Structure formats: C-alpha cells, structure tokens
Image (cartoon, rainbow, N blue to C red; front, side, top):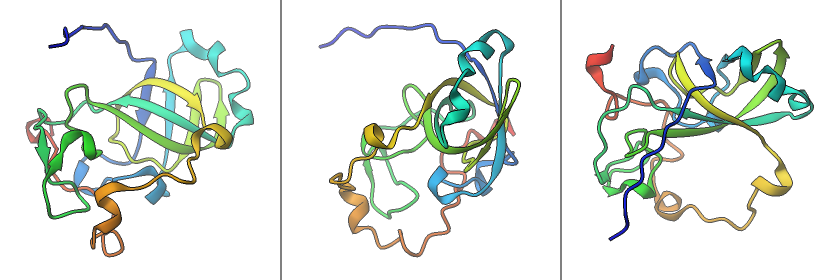
Length: 168
C-alpha cells in the first residue's frame, strides 16, 4: 500500500463568475460563453508577464463548495455509475478543477475570461498558458462518454448532485 502524503497549497487569487449556485453553472468551459474574471493576488503580478500573448489559459482551482467524494458516481452526461476517476465530478479526494478559458484581456492583476464554468469566489491555484501543440491530442478517445446518448441532448448545465448545499 502506498503512503499518503499531505501537501500545503495556497490560493494565488480568486475567480469571479456570475454563478452563485451549481444548478446553473455550465459543466465544461468548452460549453460556456459566460464571462468572468480572475483576480490574481498582487504578489504574483510579475508572473503575468507575457501571458497576454496567449489566446487561452488553463486555470487550476479548488472546488470550494463540493460535497465529500464517493468513489462511484453518476455523472451529468450518463445514467450509469462510473468510478470517480473516470468522470469530471467536482467532489474528489482533492477537489481540484481545471478549465481552459479564453483570455479576453488583462488589466493589472485582473484577467478577463470567457468560458467560465466555476462558481463565484472559487480559489485559484495556478494559471498555465494553453499551447495547442502541447495540449491537443487528436487521437484521444472519450471512454464511456462516446456512447452516452445524453451528450447531444443535454443542456450542459450542472445540477446539485455534487453541491454542498449547506454552504449556500
């Protein structure tokens, strides 16, 4: 059995979006045209140099309102249960989210974005530039999702199945 390690992690900023509840939040950034912004802490402003040269960025963040994880879950786009690590549910042992968003503009420490799919006041963990030559995988497959009948008939909005409702 492997030894569990603990890590300290700090927020480097806050993501602001129009979404106060998961019930109306898009389930993927690629299915969202919602605007928002990322407020990066001033101590990290120097790290934003040259970021404005990229059209898209990758945001890593903490699902701060997620329920405790279960190892088997029914995802938004299927009626069957799957293992947690085969879905993108926010309730995870380490509730880390990842979204590729369009970088609209940068004003000081504020990054204006399009494609928001996270709740308002989400803690930001990291920012990485999206680089098509490195980040696209043309031969990638979609596992169980490729067979899902819900993909073409889904609203791509979340519900409250992974929401820690007492936080609202």
